[in-house]
Amino acid sequence: MKLVCTQSDLNANLSLVSRAVPSRPTHPVLANVLLVANEETQRVSLTAFDLSLGICTSFAAEVSSGGTFTIPAKLLNDIVSRLPEGEITLEDEAGDTVAYLTCASGNYKVRGMGPEEFPELPAIEAGKILKLPPEALIEGLKGTLFATSPDEAKQVLAGVHLKVLQDSLEFAATDGHRLAVVQTINEPDAGEATEEEFEVTVPARALREVERMLVMRQWTEPVTLHFEHGQVVFEWADQRLTTRTLEGQYPAYRQLIPPSFERQITLERRSLLAAVERIAVFADQKNNILKCSIDAVNQDITLSVDAKDVGSGKESMPAQISGDSIDIAFNVKYLIDILKTAQSPEIQLQLNGALSPVIFQPLGGVNATFLVMPVQLRA
Image 1 (cartoon, rainbow, N blue to C red):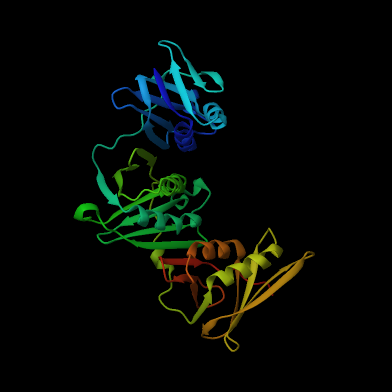
Image 2 (image 1 turned 120 degrees about the vertical axis):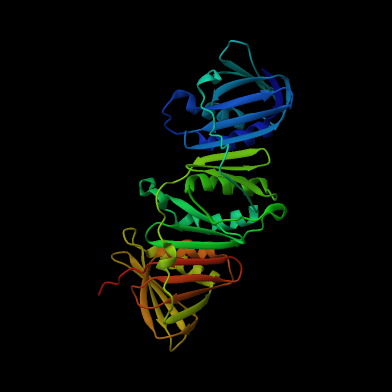
């Protein structure tokens, strides 16, 4: 095998697939990246796979002799990222397990492994095939990923639930304390229509990579989603991401949203976020409680944090309030996450009692509903 490519191409694609390399591989070869040089197509593909998440990408190169090789991902990434810009020659000798890198400043020798033991990425031969608009996919992921549970032991709560309908996509995520639901328009490619409702729960880790890859490449063409029981594949351009789905019944999240509300508050989102972030410096790390005093008479809301033995903070701001005055408290982190995600000029709060679910809805822009459970105030 022998190929010549640019440092920037190799570095960018290697960094991309390396995110699927396990930190504690169950088999030595999983710590490697699979490199395939194709003389006919004059392209090089890189693949990493941790047996759950797999990423494959390819780029153009001058391939004078094709071949397949696996190289330690971290070591190769560390070397290539530090090399000067310009051409890199990568080659090995038949029957040898050593790769040789040559650049303008010097040369390196990296011991790898043969490709025989590297597992193949799962292939979906049947199942469903969907075309998803990338902007709708990005919008839905940005609005929900923050609400997934970081604890993978919580099964489906560690993922985003994607529901595909004929004219819309619905994304939902909850960690048991908060809920995010985003609806985006589904415009099937070339007039294709989704004939039946389609639901799947995909691990948040995999979807963060999908979002990052789409944003980084600024991809505008439809993303192809292949699905069959237990496996999902996202494909676009020269990139492919495969992941296992999360098994289990996703919570009936629509039932968590109250049908009506006694109070409604409208605020300027950026001002509210800035005020919350300022006084949040006093939030106790154990409970992160922020108190909101909603004054319907004076049409304002007062935010306060009181940290024992540290200090306190208080800020007030105008608001449009309908309904009676009330005191309510939130986990300040949850509040900040919602306000950062909403991305709208104004945000509307809808609530009933001090311990009932509170709905945050951005006014303008994305069609999103964020639910958070209040915290009980101590007497």
